[in-house]
Amino acid sequence: MRAVVEKEEVLVEWTPEEKKSLPPRYGCELLFERTTLKQIKDPSLPNDAYLVIYEVDGNAHMDLCRGTRVRIFDLYYDKFGPGSVKKIDFGYGRTNPKIWGYKAPDKKKRK
Image 1 (spheres, rainbow, N blue to C red):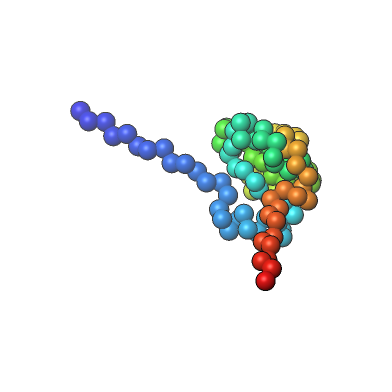
Image 2 (image 1 turned 45 degrees about the vertical axis):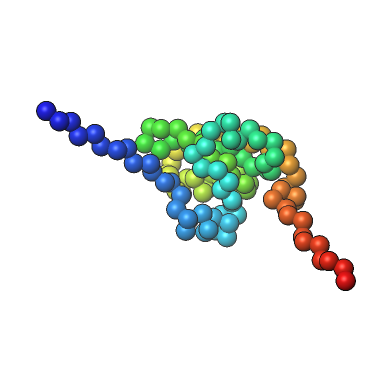
């Protein structure tokens, strides 16, 4: 007898369209979704990012998100429903948000 093994599908919680609509709608920016503590403990991340622990279908997940706690809560409450947000805590980043992701402009060559 031959057993058929079904592949487990990886569920994507945030579509690219949703990620683009987050800043104007909620004032939040999603940095990492379904991540691990190893990725989040990077000190080069901005210090205004929050660690969001939430539950979907009995499974706990972690995201790293920038914004105010109230806006982040509203975002996850609207997306996953009541009781899904378990904890919103400070992230581990140490970089000033003003200079995080900043790239120096190219210098022009003098003639």
